[in-house]
Length: 334
Picture (cartoon, rainbow, N blue to C red):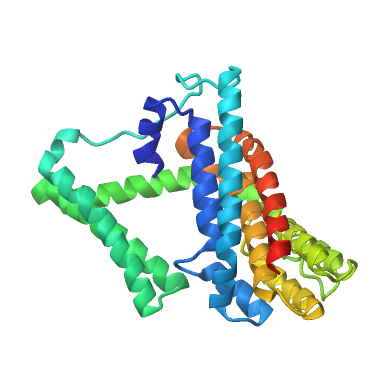
């Protein structure tokens, strides 16, 4: 996505930091928090809350829409405001390193149009197959990954003819090298975030109680046990628990806890189990899945050539506003 759309965005005047923000908010925020296709996140939260996956997915739809609209509109307004005031320039003042592209003459115009239609059709077929065959989690990921390799192979054969297989290997190696370069910085940074999760016992030692879920998750449990039980407080608490557990940088590690807390509150309130579960899921993934925690932002930042910490700072206010508005909306849906 970055390699294809970044040059286009820069050409029409969108700064690189704006491209990175859009990739985060739409990809790691809207798409990942709802997870409507693969449904890995809803399954984890639904199992923890003891409710069907479909109910969590349906309950998350209005919340994801509200969160997505508020965050993207807020981010766009702030970006335009800073560009107008000269804080961000769109004429290349932000240095962007674009990956080398292949010779555009390798494919004819007809071949380019053919693949432009074929690629979205193949991925649409993947979505249909996942829906019909009920593929989730690793199976769905394998299907999408296999389709991507198949597309790469077809394009390589069309562009390089007899050397297509050899070039496919070269492209794969180049892709792996770029992946290692991008994610290499994740390892030391992520280690500090994992200290707040179960990694504390592994790295520091057995200094926490045996019942501990990790420092960050323990804070979420403690918060859920000292607040009054009603719809308004329940919504605020689920957002806070989700956001706190998302601080470990995973987003997915704390959503089971969010589901458990949602079950407790829904039992006391007498309603809203699916809505509370979806709210906790959205808060955890928006914070830890790739919009606020710096190490989770590294792939998008590296592709766009921007500082991941600057990207996290730019995402902070829109995501915070979005969580507040989404929490208020959830209060009326419980």
